[in-house]
Amino acid sequence: TSLSPVAPDLEFPSDFLWGTATASYQIEGAAREGGRTPSIWDTFSHTPGKVQAGDTGDVACDHYHRWAEDLDLVKELGIGAYRFSTSWSRVQPTGRGPALQSGLDFYRRLTDGLLERGITPVVTLYHWDLPQELEDAGGWPERETAERFAEYATIMAEALGDRVSMWTTLNEPWCSSFLGYGSGVHAPGRTEPLAVLRAAHHLNLAHGLGTQALRAALPAGAKVSITLNPAAVRPLTGSPEDADAARRIDALQNRIFTGPLLHGGYPEDLKADTAEITDWSFVLPGDEEIINQPLDSLGINYYNPAIVSHAPAGGSAKDDGHGDSAHSPWVGSGHVAFHQATEERTEMNWSIDPTGLTELLLRFHREAPGLPLYVTENGAAFADTVDEDGQVRDPRRVSYLHGHLGAVRDAIGQGAPVRGYFVWSLLDNFEWAYGYSKRFGVVHVDFETLRRTPKSSALWYADLIRRNRPM
Ligand code: PNW
Image (cartoon, rainbow, N blue to C red):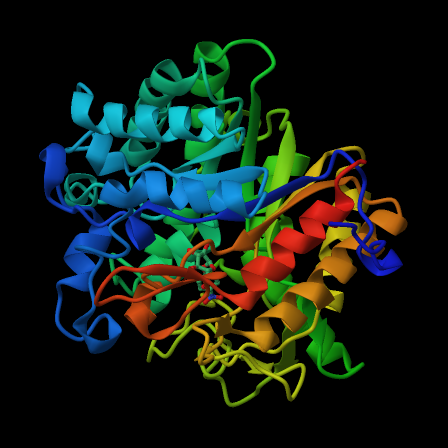
């Protein structure tokens, strides 16, 4: 078939990496197989009232058994890279000690399956499923968890280092710390301001120690990265109060990670904003140097922008797009209010505004000159309809993806070194506190029969990739 030329707004470099992403707890199921023990998400989802409709990841998409079929789909769609995460408690059930052969075997089969199909594996070591035993010992607020993470990183590098060259330590440490220990809408569901900041630091440290462990165990040439979910934060008005609100949220969602990661230390204004909670003495001498090691690339997940204002009455958890909780995740900055950027929303009630993505990519281009950037997640929750001929239609997802890929193209046009893009997600899956009620997949999953059906967005994405392929 002859292809019409790519629209100029969607013309990408010929070596651009086209991918799609998933996460272990959201798709694998098989929660008790092969010696796997509960992670904090198993415990949380089995606690009544925590996840919508009482949904759990016990079966999810049953990817643990259907992985070959899923990889066939990725290949048929012509998607060149697959970003997945490994389940720590499938590999190291207690979070400590020797690895489970069955867990390593599963991820070896999966990566071999990818390579056989010509798909580049991109591994994330931690996408939120901490072994429950490590949480019982205190979880991310404790330094020991970072040390255990480095051992787990070594195990994975030794198991997969001969076949995987793109590694990511953590996915969205902001969610792990602020939603897990602050608002409590994510596992482990704690609501302790001090624990949030301790968790954020120990996640940063886990990245640093994990990076050292990976570099020691991986062959030369392997790439190590981290994925953040930075806020594209904008003040509601030009007032100094709103500018301060934006500065606070930038500190609590962005610079708390990029400070030590890219610039060697925690920002002074962040420490001042949180002085009533902690003196930050849990940051030991040398920690910031461990965190501030050379990175091979930076992963950015983007869904929506954040519009903020000063709210004298307080109550910042409301409407920030991060779920409903009586407890604000925004520790030390309770007087910030969140606003919607646009009328148009996804089913998460997240505003649709691709300019936030361009803005973030240009920001990191300026902030870390030359550091390759990947959009490691971008996508939207929308319901779909099924035609008489069985075609699953999701036109709003197509238009969301089109707009956001245009935003990536814009950033590249302005010089940002964006090397790839991963649609979130390959499959409809367990959307954390929302259970199966929100569908992010480009492939529809019937959760009764577990049947997979590519949606029109998957076909659109496949077509875009094909047109961008060098002739
Ligand atoms: C990301 N928030 O999660 C995750 O990396 C995915 O696992 C998830 O399915 C996807 O985005 C869609 O939600 C987020 O409250 C969860 O702002 C919550 C927030 C952001 C990202």
